[in-house]
Image (cartoon, rainbow, N blue to C red; front, side, top):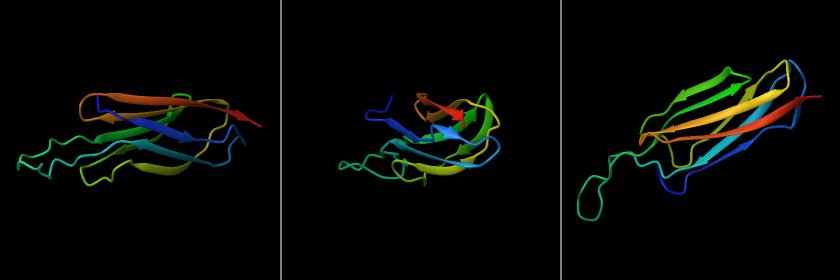
Length: 109
């Protein structure tokens, strides 16, 4: 597990059924591409978040595959729509097999 990894998510607490709402996510991660070398000239091993998913009540909203060119601390902003209140589950997958997730609950108002 990479050190210092911290997922952060912003969602509205209340949304209107059937209308788009904005979700913002950021995960703190150094995202080493595997292309650089250390002071001794050795390649620094690749260590990136390689996939990000978001689901609302078990239904996929977004599924992103990331490549080594992705920046440090990847940030995503996207819109989603739901007809019912429930859990919004965010999951990030790391090269080392670690999985980081967080859940937010949205209500219909």
